[in-house]
Image (tube, rainbow, N blue to C red; front, side, top):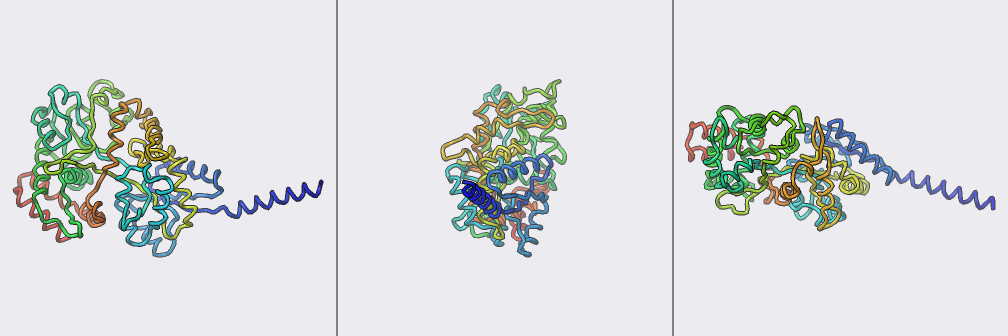
Length: 446
């Protein structure tokens, strides 16, 4: 009997030793480098280790440095196993050979293709494969005073025509500006608005073959509309700061903003108080606000939504199986912690644990948002509003995505040619035809 017990103990020790020997350590580079977000990712890593025995080293890398550092690490054959990156990095990283598309495709298929919003997955497709796994995202919103629209019998601002009609009825400065459009050319915010409006109008500066689009018909629609909303804005160099302040103060009928405004509208951030009344924590403005994710211009009835999506890429230097296992874990058992890093800016790209299931969306709506005060979005906005905002990710788009020209389009965005020329046009320095032709010419020079 004693020998049997010793044998059993030996077998248990042997099994334990084998288990420990199979445990690996992988590294993830993350752009989510704020202390509270690092803590959330460390919790995911700890839970993954408790389940699998594998350790994940979470290394913060600034978003502005991620491309440079990844390129250097690739050259040295020392990429991390998992790489957190933006939509702008998708095709550059993939075309350079950094990302294992087959591994990413397997992860999405294992989790269930139908459980993901289609927009973020389509953005990540190249040559029939998914180059990186989408984790979260947001769609830019047309934010509007639904109470004022109802009072005046106006349609929600879902089209250029709707917005123009609302401006005609609601623009009454300085008490109420019809719109607050960006005019500061060195701010990213202005290019975000331009791209959003261009998508709605069906205009892209890049053709399917990568050449510059020389057809200016839809471009002129973009320019004309941008002048309309800028004419309904205050004077000066405007960017996100003024648009937010004026809307929170009840002096703007419409703005275009990211969903990070959602908690501020609910009176949860002291640095961006609601000033529509004497109570900076008031939820009255949130109640009176409506949101449009997909809007359309002339000739593009389907419209579009501007989306920003984040991804976890499995690199070609990775311990592939463990990296895949970790990414699957982060988008299932660890998904609450991942989205909880900043729920107002991290919409779930994976709707539920299976196709047709929305349990992750339900979970997300119950996560706390805010800075100085915290509360679930579901306590501030009706379910129908939240559902509509999240649904925008399914059709989220960016210039060049559909044609595999995101890399070229990103160069044009970064050059800010359209910001510069549009400012000249709205200031009356050049006419419509000259503005359209100058944009095409300068894009071709690039």
